[in-house]
Figure (spheres, helix red, strand yellow):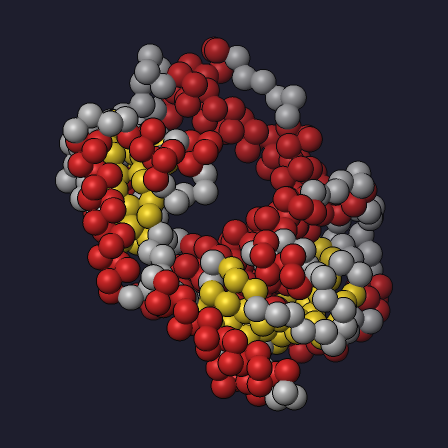
Length: 428
């Protein structure tokens, strides 16, 4: 609930003194009404931003301070709108929240290379990173709902769009070069020999456990999940949706203290032990033996893709071949079509490198990413150019509407700030 009126410093000091000791140690960056912004909140947001945008702060020491300052201002606005969300009893879809958290964590792991590196970068265990990320995303979702509710009825006239374009056309960024691409993905699947080797190893571990061996010690010694292995296989307290389906289905069947048999997932073979169950959350340990493809498995995958490519060059339809052969789980919906991307901002560097040299209609040679091996078809390419009302009316209309909303949003925030005491602490 947004509080009206200005509280005295005496009331503020009483509130601060009542904060948990950890928050005092952590350090308060700002107080917004009865809400606080911690320095660690700012650090978490900035760290996420730096990783996602691949910013090298070492080469620009002053940039970090600017990011912190801007983040503080954003978090103050967020706290104001969170109070409004509570006032309006706004809720978020928990299932969608879980999905977004998992996607963000996986993205960060992919960017940094491993879960270990993610923990090192944030200086926290993965369990805390997930918890903090969930808090961040939940607050963002609440704020977006409040903003959407406030401005969803806003319209913009044709005259306003034309006026906006006349005023800002020289300052609008040019449209970057884009490509429309489709792909076929083949995962590198271990041979039967590699699968048998991994199964024999996990089966041997299971026999030791059945004979009374300590689960955590065997996890430390044998598990191929390094992040949890150093904690005796401990995965922490996890909610539904945090595991892959096969692991989750097996884990949720276990009772406290019970151990599973051998469970196979995309990562390899697991043995799971239930530590405790708290409602719909579970605390487990696991031992993982990864299925490691051999060099021969990679060569077999490349040959399969080359054969598929040749069939397409001989006249087969790319989409139909994607439906038949692609290991991309989305292929049933998109038939291999990935979409339209700005070449300059393509996240996966291998895709960027490949499409830069392709002509419309070309089918690439097989190439490797962290996901597996791909071939790509270039459906279309649009050169960089400036906006025009004739070609880009819908885009310009949306930009103009966003601009109008931002002006009204700033006015709205200014009005809210008049009713809520804000104290900024220094230094950040």
